Length: 574
Image (cartoon, rainbow, N blue to C red; front, side, top):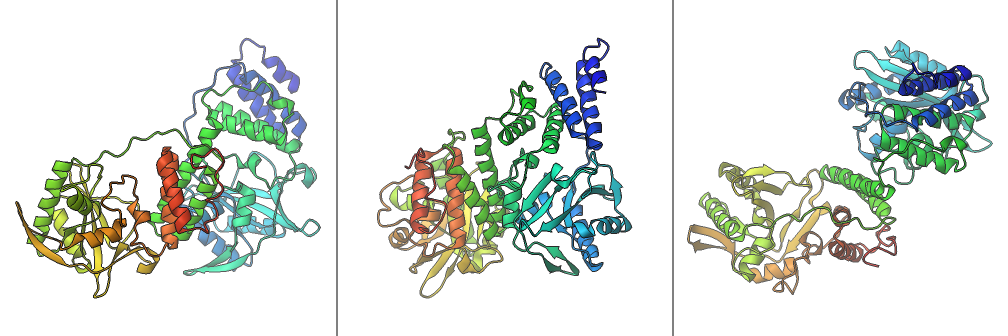
């Protein structure tokens, strides 16, 4: 067969790209027979031919969309049914990663991954068939791996068998080909982990209660950061040996990437395989990838993806998860140079237009019996500048907490539109004026006899667990303006000092009220997480001054934060 394929490369009637495809299929056929040396020879010849050709156009995805809303209930029901029959089966791989990191299945996933002890592997596979799962074709013949598909939902499930090796004190997994010693396959080894039963509603199934170590061994130390280009087959630290089978898999994966026009994946695979075997002759003269990402840029984008995921978790008030993801993103950023400045700053409010809109809004709310008054940057500009601050980006209004919902309704009735914010709180809403695109932040504060409590009160959490601001009580009084009566703080200087510090009369465009306000008494886990998010935001945007200031603030407010002292020597604050 090798001779036949080699001869076909020179036959004028066979298009070169078709010859690459034929070489891939022939290599795969050898691999299915566990003839890994022959498969590698065929694959390398096909790669050498591909290196002389132009890259194919990226192939269109033909696989069905992975419906996580259907897949998760199906997964839990399947695990529950297996547990009821006495089998130990639990989520692993990408399924476990999504459930732990994001509290859901990964939106980019393509299948479900579950594991079971090898001693139960055949029985679990048969049980899946009896549950309605249908066997799915796989390209290799393995003794510990089966794939199934749910015919109704079109969802694929991969089952892998593993076992405990008492001599090594390791849990072994991976892909073990038929007809060869297990050590000749792709063997993964993991630190032993504990399993326990979990009850969720009416379901009961097996889980790994402490999965962090396993996920770190599977996906690397930065597993909390999304990485759509990851090639975990060859980047996992759990791989025992890069043997002939692993080499063969690498060549096949390279050919798949080339044939489907996935240049970035091809480059990432090449890097991973060369790290495993720098002298591998099969990796010489590979196709060039002009569209492949620069490694540093790719790593920086991974930090950016981590920030976005952490913000998503923060918005859902999953603070522990958001904090863990943010920490890994910061830890990753410590190894990288500050990115070049990319984004333009948010344009400030048109001060004259914003000033008029603020006064109109306060008068309208007062006319409805709502004690709304200017606060934050709007109050600072009013007192210090006689108008809005020249660098302000929104209007800030506070109302007594019992009037918060009526104030929201009145703003909507007046033409303001609800806008999204990265926090989920009961006392903070954002609105945008459609004509001017000016935004307004509305807060509800609790006026108590001895203290006024403001800040951000997370939905579903105790108020004290959020970002709590405390002020000495101040009085409100009505004033008459050109457009009518409105409410204001009688003596705002004290409130401004508590909000901005004793030097509030001196302009400071870099002041971050959300982190620096003296009124913020306790730097809770919520505040700590917000601080890391703000730090990452400045890092990603390449704003060195803002980054350095936020770094110092968070270091001062959270001196025990473990990741802040790890930045490289070439960072702009060193």
